[in-house]
Length: 208
Image (cartoon, rainbow, N blue to C red; front, side):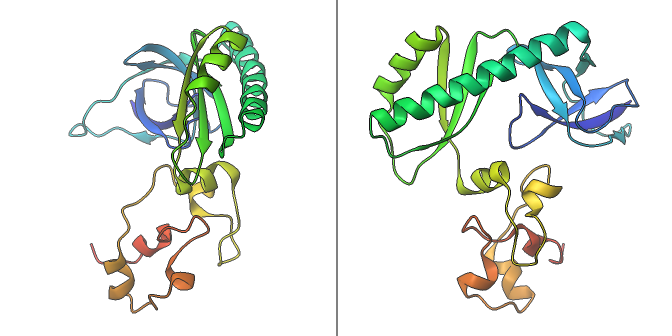
């Protein structure tokens, strides 16, 4: 049995799932087990052999078949329409928010819309209007600066694509203490990433 990192309907962060399938590849679509039922996801890594002492995770139910793939393609198209509709409504209502992405659940019963904003946004009227236009349940979620950069992608000061976009499945724990232990200048320009938060790479050489 292997453990895989999977992005459930294209979340920015991944979740661990177990599977008897040992040949899943990155970017493959799979159907996974969640608390709310079957959902679709995208495999993020090659998978690692599960050791006996490791805790169990939810299961990958199957590799997406032709019918699943057809449903996923339809959901992706619907999600793009939902994103554009939400962005248009936000602009029309002069809401200070940036629509980042939209994702439908596998049964198409709900669309989850992620947005970034510097301040709290009253989007209640927008949700009502969206629900009427899309005829489904709406969930709006405000994402943080790290998630925004991970979704968009950017080049870090090192010249490489940001770690969060390139290979980090989930964000490492980072603290100012790590910079101090490595004798790195504590000026924001040196220790903060594109997102304005402490650089993920500060954790790479810290003492465990």
